[in-house]
Length: 490
Image (cartoon, rainbow, N blue to C red; front, top):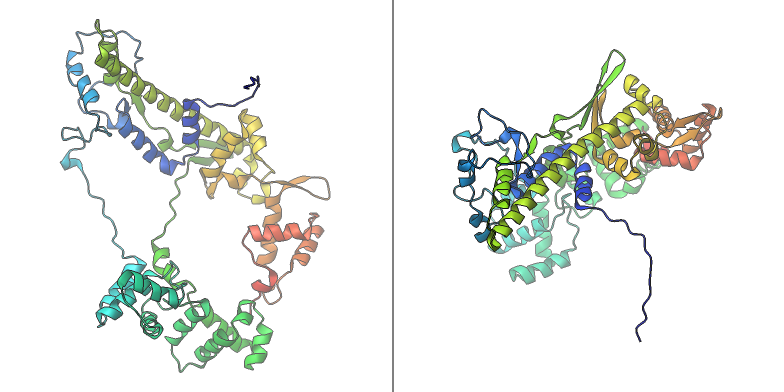
């Protein structure tokens, strides 16, 4: 037997416009152009004024609401450009302007952008393999080994797995000795250290390519081969006793090992990797007065297509409306609404960005004037959200992906937020101030006897910051600074 019940629920629903605004808000400036181009391609009712149709060289029409009046006699030629049947019959067309008659850029105006051609890590290895005089069988085994290397240049898979791969993919029944010999050949390729199965083998391959008559090289090989654990843990006293050497000689050996590349496969890729940061805001200091500006790329000149507005009025006011006509009106109205929503979302994005950054700038005014991290005030997302009367999630979306350019560098907005720490005098300071003091203490420490976390805790206590040792360790790790033992130098 069915039983009917009445339940009351509280649900939060977002409109399509709100969802579109949220997605646009978290897009950084570097990706905004791409997002706008996607919208322009998907919606023919949206126009970029900077790329407006060249048929309007002398007159620029303002945005017009679809409900405004339309003079049919003045604009008959514009309506001839559009055929509703084209939209209703061409069901297989997914993008606009992609046909043979699309009004794209003229061929003469297209400019070729030079692109630097650079072989990948695996292509370089394949080229070196091609230059060797190998049998077809050995060549395929070599290809299988190269394809099994990871991005660091290591062979992490066991030889038995490579033998199985060769049997299944190449129909080659290979012996373990064959694969081992081919691996040794590949380990002679550039960059040195390629094809190693672990860090120890990688370092030894590189050392074997150096001058073997040099006693420092020989002892460096002995360290890597027999005392790698002591070396990685910086137990230098044990190394001196084991190798019967003094500290000066050990320093030369350590420096020689530190010159080696622990990730040879990444050497070619690192040079090609560049981090492109386009700041969303600019702050300038004009005689002690800060000025905030929004990157112009965040304010594109968009408008609703005038032709689409006029076409909507024309067909909406038609005396007779058959099924095709109603579908045409619905299609055009949908595109017009979508264009207006997108433009409104872009404008709302600009206002929110400026409002949020302005609140952050005023909150940390002294820091932006002096560039002294110790002037940073404790600030959490709620502090800014309360100032601008917005939700914390909105501030978070702005802070997590936006950058501001100042006269002393470019920073992620998130870096200006920090927790509060209370000093002995009861004053609240930012934990960034404590991190700055820690960084200064570690940078000026005796590298032969680095400061342990307990000692750093005592130093901070003397300066008025009563912090637990585990908190000091947490801050040190957050700054990417290793423990005292690993900071030890000869």
